[in-house]
Image (cartoon, rainbow, N blue to C red; front, side, top):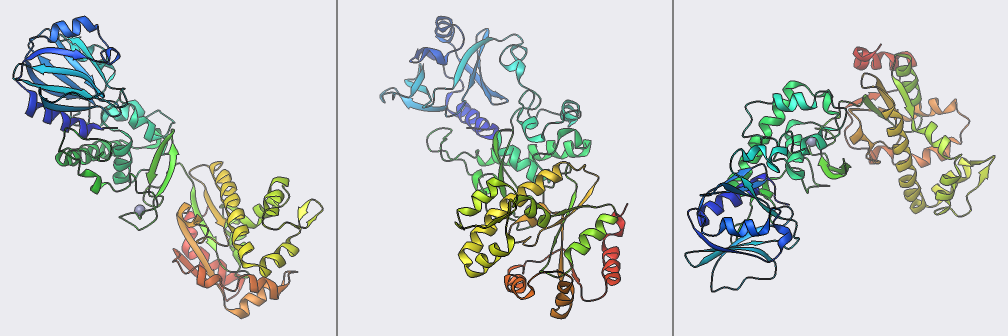
Amino acid sequence: MPELPEVETVKNVLNNIAKGKTISYVEVFRPQTVRSDLKQFQDVLKGATILDFTRYGKYIIYHLDRDYVLVSHLRMEGKYYHRDEKIKPNHNDLVLFHFTDGSYLAFNDTRRFGTMELVLKDGYLEREPLNEIGPDPFMMKDSSRLYEAFKNKGVAIKPCLLDQSVMSGLGNIYVDEVLFACKIHPETPAKLLSKKQYDEIWKWSKDIMGRAIQKGGTTVISYHPTEGIDGEFVTELKVYGQNGGKCVNCGTPLVKKFVGGRGTTFCPHCQRNIARPFVLGLTGPIGSGKSEVGKYLESKGFVYLSSDAIVHHLYELKSVQEGLRRFVPHLKVKDGKVDRVSLRDEIIANPRVKRYIERYIHELVIEELERQIKKCTKDQHVVAEVPLLFQSGYDLYCDKTLMLEVNEKSQLAHLENRKEDIEKALRLNARFADLNNKKATYTIFNNGSVADLHQKLDTIFCKMYQ
Ligand SMILES: [Zn+2]
């Protein structure tokens, strides 16, 4: 769908090719395209001279030497073609403006959503349909209109910015680009943004769309302002359509999700959701003291979420047991719970099964972690213990990450307190360090006493203690 910069380009091209021309007659092949009275439409335009084309929001306005203006919207696929009378129109041409100079302008629309209507010239901005359209960023003096409209809204900022009645011009592409430039998460409740952030949104909207207008718009694949003109701005898009690509600022893979029903791409690292509590991702091999860290931070006011506890709970669910049977048909269930020891033996015996099960369980764990984090307030701090933090990709959801490292002696000492089969537990974790070679924000070598560990944690996190 053409966005503001494309419509601006079309308007400029129309001024180049049709401004000053006189319409000898109009042919309408699809009457529904004309929203106002059809006979009046043809009568008024017959003999009219086009004085100028302007743009309001994503509407194009034909100014005429008549008491009316013609208001037109391209919608999904509307285009214009300027041709010599000798060239026949094609079946997607819906309206033809024949000029006295022997050429004609065709309004062409394969999707047939485009519209045209005559509106009385006197006060046309206060009449339908333009009265429902807010000013675009270039017409606004400052951001106060945005701030006043959204400061009490609990809904996500993205759908707010798509509401054309407050500020017009930002469509799906440019909202994503603007929010990325402002480092604002698209799901941030609008009321949590400051006046300064609305200022940034307004300024970046002007900057990004201004550059796009210079380049002639964005939607290259399905859209041509007129024959021979292509948008080039697509090469400058930083997030839109780049799902899975890397953030140009920090290298984090960009994420796509649906916000307010629209596909939305953003950097989970640069565009932090401020409605979310601070989340510390905690990882480390077996016997490295993760639960000790979790319990200690919990005593200092953190909310401690343990994926181990979540997995225990998941193993009690019938649906999860069914899910696991897809990979381990003879899954053992004891007292209504997956028998972890036999499952571990299966996993050790079969690396492929291990991979499948890890992926399956990780997704469920992350879903549950996110469900619990959503229940926290933005002022709380969360420590989320996730043994395969980086492999599961959950580090991208965390504000900071903490990795525990241990030497073999300390690891064995930590494990001795547990009733586990130490040798098997270690085999399961043998490649841990290799797989977690991505850098954590903090690394603690936990080879000393519990008091040492607490002291190290205090040094890093004491400012967050309550
Ligand atoms: Zn980033």
